[in-house]
Image 1 (tube, rainbow, N blue to C red):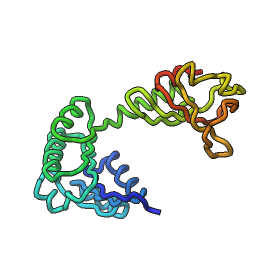
Image 2: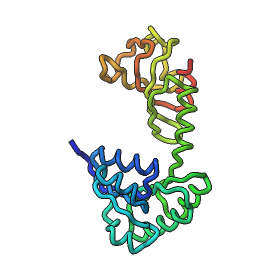
Image 3: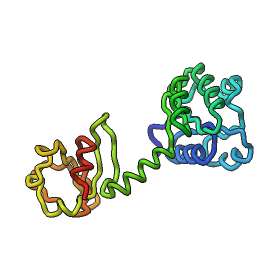
Image 4: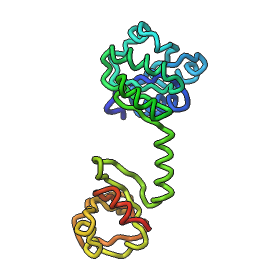
Length: 219
């Protein structure tokens, strides 16, 4: 069932843009995919709502494509900074609610934020950080940042905590870490009993200062 459907435009259909556009469409969103390359447009046309061959540095073309109606526009063509700046500038004039841009370098990111991009991502940097975390902290399964310090993290219980109760571990008082959810029979349940026992490789959700969680649960 489709839910929370949004109107999203993805401009620039390289590897990043192509994957974003098709996955958004699969998730139930209405997706306009735009690229200058006719071959790519022909390839993606059946995998998105609408696919259009166009040059988004032309402000008149953006107006004709009715970009004002989109909740979010994602720019995936990060090879040319000049092209990105022009595209962001034109989109800002159309009062787009959210402009997300893919950048290759930190300098590109800073410039694009200054000219009006709402969010700039660097996929390679993000993936590098994810790989480092996966290698350094293999017990961390998922992580959701709450603020600059705190996170909600899904953890695979390490061997050193196996067979111990939450009361024994006393994570809240010692480290400010709260165990919120615990997996049982492939479902998560809210943890309320301090005598709940943890077992190795069991999945739990904990909340607290991220650096402290990584330190405490490290094998």
